[in-house]
Image (cartoon, rainbow, N blue to C red; front, side, top):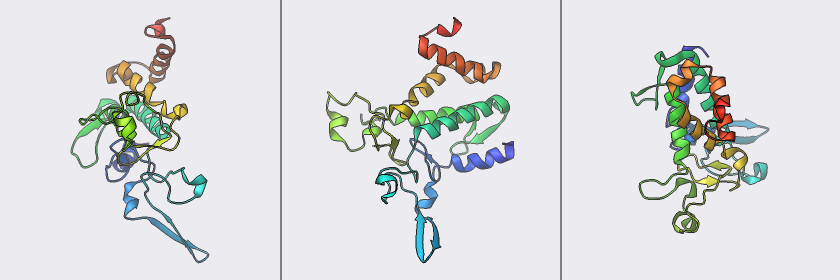
Length: 215
């Protein structure tokens, strides 16, 4: 994307009234909560509306919903794209994040902010509650359960509560390498070397342990 097009795309993506939720990028803009897309075919009305949690239809078994919740693999792809684009545009290119806040960020900082929101899903808030567990009292307060983190299939688009399958480590586990990557690499490091090399090094270290990247 050119700078002009990228700013237009990110203007929507980083808008908290649209795609940017408190716990990551939503799969459908929150704009469609009050402005659903409606069309008519064969005398029937069909509607696509923002749904932050479970689907309101029996489509795909009734529990699979791409109309609002946060999905970890999509967020991971967006973060990777932002890091790649940062390697090209560097520190001189900044966008507003969140949109309308007046706060300018580099694409690296935007990627960090998205990961911060994703990881906040699993961490205790100021009240000692983990958003991932929503209203599940057993998981929130029981000392035998409260620290056993579950990797749900997807997450409520507004409050981060876990939804769908509760052991979806196959893709929600992506939050771990995202956290690890930003703990190991800073913006300067990524600009001074090939991003692909840095990611490869981080992966080797993750698999082989600290310092394995030098082997």
